[in-house]
Image (tube, rainbow, N blue to C red; front, side, top):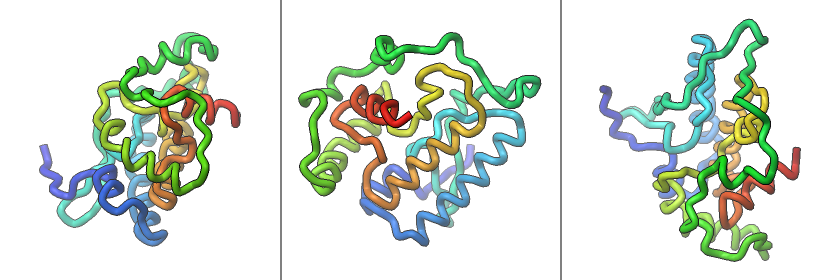
Length: 187
């Protein structure tokens, strides 16, 4: 196994808060190439998140954690259908939400973008190392177990790019359920 002393993008974002447009463009471009390579082998990664974007000693990106990869059924125009579609009633069960991550009131309204950034920074470490993960980077169609294709990896990458430039994911909320409701409400 290759040693990657550069850490991961999550650690970089925790240290830097945001990246310059130039630096973000570099990391996003390298990640696109890594995702393209997986797609050329007829797989969808489905777990693109900052923790899985590792940096080598020269600062180049390496994609990791292929445990959720799925082969693409080429006979169905590169789409997958995970069991049955899931309604909002089953949202909590599908994510296996850890109650320790939702210790604040549901449906909280942020007073400002700065307040949201501060909350994300305080909770980032807890979310990054939670055993159940966070829905901040999951494409809605994957979460809802609807038919999807390679584009779900690009959804995840776009959420990472937003976080690199703004300082927190685009649909960030106090708890994972509220995050999901935010992005599902925009569909």
